[in-house]
Amino acid sequence: MEKAFSKNLINIEPYVAGEQPRSADIIKLNANENPYPPSPEVHKAIAAFNADGLRLYPPMDAAPLRQAAADFYGLDRSCVFAGNGSDDVLAAAFRAFFNSDKPILYPDITYSFYPVWCELLKIPFRTIPVDEGFNVNVEDYYTDNGGVVLPNPNAPTTIGLGRDRIEELIKHNRESVVIIDEAYADFSGVSCVPLIKKYDNLVVTQTFSKSRALAGMRVAIALADPYLISYLDAVKDSYNSYPMDAVSICAGTAAMRDREYFEATCGKIVATRQRVTKRLRELGFILPDSSANFLFATHPDHTAREIFSYLRENGIYVRYFSKPRIDNHLRITVGTDEQMDKLLELLEKLINK
Ligand code: PMP
Image 1 (tube, protein in one colour):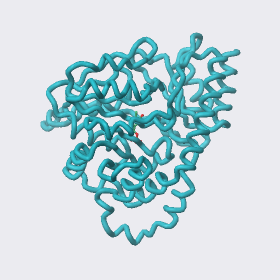
Image 2 (cartoon, protein in one colour):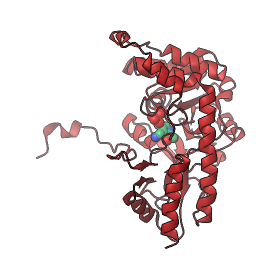
Image 3 (tube, protein in one colour):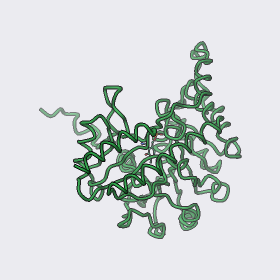
Image 4 (cartoon, protein in one colour):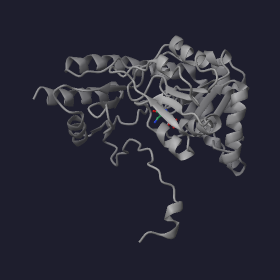
């Protein structure tokens, strides 16, 4: 029987994350996690962490982490916001910046959390179709709007735009806030962070879940003009003053300060990505050049659903979306060379059957 209060319950279709396997033997290539461990500096920082300090609230503004990010990019600390993973930072940004009656714009094929936040926060939105090759054409965004959000590179398509293209997008949207979601930018070599000094309507978000191997810690930042950062802080302080716990701040700071390890592991992932892309093409897969730590592939002779199930039965999880336009594609995270060799071996068997 329907309860009287049922009509007051939220009516929302939540975001569905990649499946978490129960067995450690599974090769997990379905959530774009980093196959390498976090920096040795993170291990040291956590080992040295004094639990006595946990009786106190953590620094409200995650100051050490904001300072480390500011130093990394040569910015003032007032240009940095920090939060509990970029889902938290993006949700704060949607709340802070998307309060117009006009629709916000984002691609029809993109990170599937954006429509969830729009629904949750009652933000009007309009999706802009990517072209046949999944490319975002920035000219399509030169239209009246309540804001723009765009991942660069885009997910799950793996396609990145040059900084000059994003700059055009920002220039043509000076009346709105433009959020560039750089969850995967560290694998593309293209970041729009240098543009925040030039454009006070730009917000760049970055996560530590991918390139800094801290998905389990929940750490992310936003970089923008201090004026916009003050609005993110206002939302944070109206919702949860301490989104980041003391251990996350400590681990995130250590990760941010170890540039050498970060560059080395990103470099390894990019090298594996290039090698696997080439081999997948030899096996008949069609996939764009990836600018991220994952691949977006389709095969003319085998459906994505079939390949997904075959890999799953053989202990490899990849991501399949049963969504219009992409329901014959697989999103495959770039793992270690060893993991990718196992994937390739299985795919070779299937294709040469
Ligand atoms: N943006 C994009 C484009 C993503 O793919 C993800 C990962 N699912 C996120 C943001 C969120 O990452 P996290 O909350 O782990 O920082």
